[in-house]
Amino acid sequence: DAGVTQSPTHLIKTRGQQVTLRCSPKSGHDTVSWYQQALGQGPQFIFQYYEEEERQRGNFPDRFSGHQFPNYSSELNVNALLLGDSALYLCASIKGPGGSEQFFGPGTRLTVL
Amino acid sequence: AQSVAQPEDQVNVAEGNPLTVKCTYSVSGNPYLFWYVQYPNRGLQFLLKYITGDNLVKGSYGFEAEFNKSQTSFHLKKPSALVSDSALYFCAVSPSWGKLQFGAGTQVVVTP
Picture 1 (cartoon, each protein chain N blue to C red):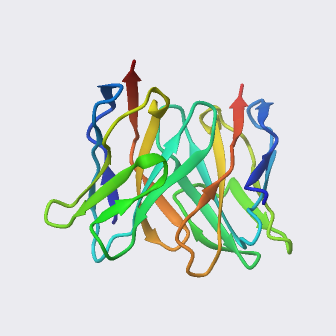
Picture 2 (cartoon, each protein chain N blue to C red; picture 1 turned 90 degrees about the vertical axis):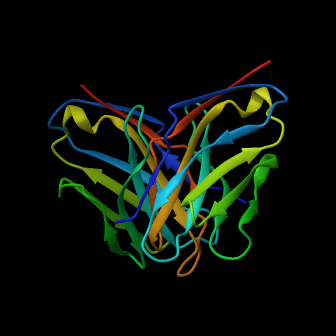
């Protein structure tokens, strides 16, 4: 039973560039949430996708956008990268609606230079 | 707004001694509370959750947590700590389905 997978593992970009991160949920899960974890901090909720629509959004600018595909996998896109976007980006999946336990992937480490 | 607070940045304990990691919450209504653990360069691993029912919740790897409504606390405990328990621990509340709001984390250091 495959858990949550994310790609790539690491990524280095320069300011102003755009990046796409990918996530495949745990088998049987249909909902994906994305989190940003800056160094030394707890993860911050970015947004959640269910039935291919953004259902909830945290306090992140429109530069952060996402997509969910019919197979439940998801992408996180960040435009016009800033130095402050450097973080570990975590994807979590949950079986919904009604599931309570989120399973996290290993994350993508994004470094913006 | 719902939130959790972890008052300790770091907890140091000797192997074999009891381990407690503190968490307090601020929630209107019934809280959905969680504990996760993060090892270096890894994602978060689920330990346990409180939704409703018994105040003492048992989880993975010998961990348990006690929900205390009067003290608005949800402390994580383990009777006998192992060196391998050294990691970063996060308390979280779920203000809505599919969304977790995390505390700042507590680094646990277990010395042999």
